[in-house]
Length: 177
Image 1: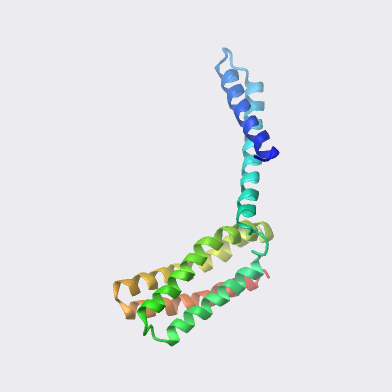
Image 2: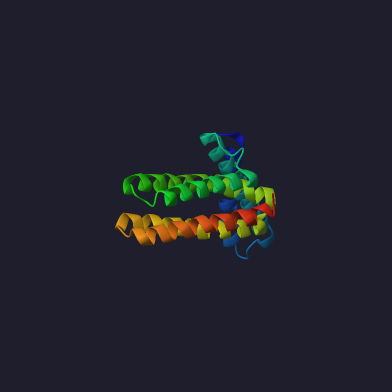
């Protein structure tokens, strides 16, 4: 355990115990209770900060997940979707593997993009960026589901729409790059 983690855990334990003691007194010791709650909030902040850092270090990631890298990520997703559409989903198994790979990439990498892009451009702008991308992701998932269920026309329609929406997402990102 890192020193920051140990300190934050100790602060959490002490502040919870202290706040319980101060609140249970008759009359309650409101000033001391308030201070112990503030210490608890600070300790939770330290714990979260330490955990975020630990997550990125554990996977060797966290660097390079910028807004510009996200735009490139979406561009390569669009390219993959267009390649699937060019082949008219002739080989269902191959198409399924391609879509599965992208769905997995999105689910793994989005945590890193979320943290870094939020720090880079702020939560308000990140929300605008991610909302536009979420539409494309939703269509990608629907296309994948339709493909698995054997509805090729619905799959093609949803994948085509996902490719179109990725371009819209890139336009939103370019406002901030």
